Structure formats: structure tokens, C-alpha cells
Length: 368
Image (cartoon, rainbow, N blue to C red; front, side, top):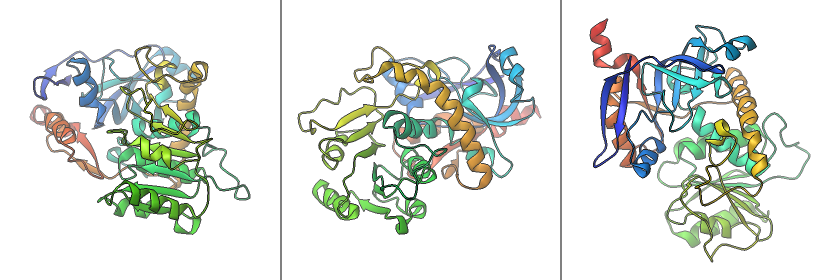
């Protein structure tokens, strides 16, 4: 099969190589990849570790085979349309004709959802869901907040990013309002997700930190906010976000694993909680990560949580109550992965997720 190896240093390059088709383990599926999706970590993690590999972890395609445990459950059949989250930094990634994924991070793509849309969902949706429902214990979509209970304000910084947008969609599915979405130039898609009748509001960060804080305070209309997600988690963005929360009970979820989040400007009563989406496969954080969960035992449940969450997402998609992120198809299939990741690294993917149609790969087209 054809597989892309990403070389992060000295400059980012990609090479298309021949590789054996991976063999699924007992509880894994072998998936014929039709569309692969990109994430920032696809270039960031391998750059930090100075390794070259097939770093793709989002895929949509067709079940081609499975291990004996996965087959025994009867949940999947060969030929099923599926989307999957592949274990990060492991062999058999999604920038290839075939990938292998644990069955619990695979879900059925309903007939009303395209492969391109589905490829934007797995990794980022799991990251958003872990942040809100596991780390912060906000009511999940399958047990939503009662309309008769007090509102649960949620502030999302970087709302136009894929992570921010999926957090909005999941929060809406759980009846979490008001949603205060903080973003910049790319506002139209975010605005379409918000429900002004439920108190949702959009705040522009481009006028400075103090103006942003004032805009959030105005949008909250006297409510105390205890929950926030920093979908950017860069250059201390979590600090002003923490300062907007209840100083005694605030929680901010962050997604950059290299920070310790111990700045003196942070209110003492506000907890900074790092989300490591790899815990959906390992059930644990890596011991080298500077920010560890306070309750390491609770992370064991992330594996089963991922199983439940992705199956519920499939149901929401089928009902028309959930959607993927806007996409941009990068030309050339696997040949375009290097260019797509460079654009991602350059910050060019504003409001869209880059995806790659494997059938567009030149050498595969020539074989036909």
C-alpha cells in the first residue's frame, strides 16, 4: 500500500512510500481509508520529538477486516462506512491507503454524512468532549441539563477553531447555555451555531484583553461563569480566561501539553485542567507531561467514555443534530499531505479542516 511519511526537520517534507498493509490486533479494525483529516498535532508532535512517521490520526473509510475480539461483538461488518481516531504516535496512521484503529474509537458514518465531513470529527470531538464532560463534569449530551435547572455558562476561547466549534456543538447537544464564544475574524460559522434566545453571544478578542473581558461580562448578564475551554492554549491565553471565572470554583480546560500552567496571575481558586486526548486509548496521561490530572484513576474511564461518546455522535449525525467542521479538500490526495500540513503550520487553515481524498493520489489513479 501507499503511505506518507512526514519528515518535520529541518523543514517539513513528506514522502510517499510503499508499506505493508497493517494487520489489526484482536480489538482493532482494518479500515480502507477514503478520506484522511489533518490536525495541528500531525506536525507539532513529531517536530517536538524529532521523529519521522505517518502522523495522521483521523480517517473515514470502509471496514476491510477486523481482529477476533472486534468481530465477536458483531458491531461492525466488512463494508461498513466508518470514521476513526487512530492512536497518536503509533504505526498504521491514517495518511495511507489502510489504517488500523481500536474498535472503541471507531463509529458508523450515517448515510446523511459524507466521508469528507466524517473525517473532521473523531480526534477533535473527543478532545472537546473530554474537556467538558470528563475533566469538568458538565452534563453530557445523553444526560443533558434539564430546562428547569439553573443555566450553566460556558466560555469558549478560540471558538472558530475546529475544537472550539465542536465544543459549541456538544454543549448545545447537552443543553448547556449561555455559550460565550470568543473569536476573531472568522465569525460567520460560529454565529450560525449560537442560539441568542438561550443567551449565547459572540465576543471579539481583537480589541484587546480588557475589552474582551468587558464583552464577556456583558454577555453573562450577571451570571457567574465556572467553566471555560481554551481551544488555542498558546501565549498565556488561559490567564485572562481564568480571570473571567468565579475565583473560587472556576475550571479552564487547556490542550497544550508542554505547559505547567502555574503562572502567578492565575486566580488561586481556578483550576487549569489539561486534556490529553490520547487517554481515550491509553486510559492514562504520559508521565512526562508537566500537567497531570488530580485524579489519575478517573482517567481510566476515558476509554469507555470514548466508546459511548462516538456512538452517540453517530446517532446525533443521523438525526441531523450534529455536524462536522467545514472542510477544504487539499488536491493530490496523499501527494498533497505535505503541502496541507505546511499550510496548517503556517496558520492558513482558518475556519476549515484540511482533508485528503486518497483516490486523488496520482500513483493510485495511474494504477487504475
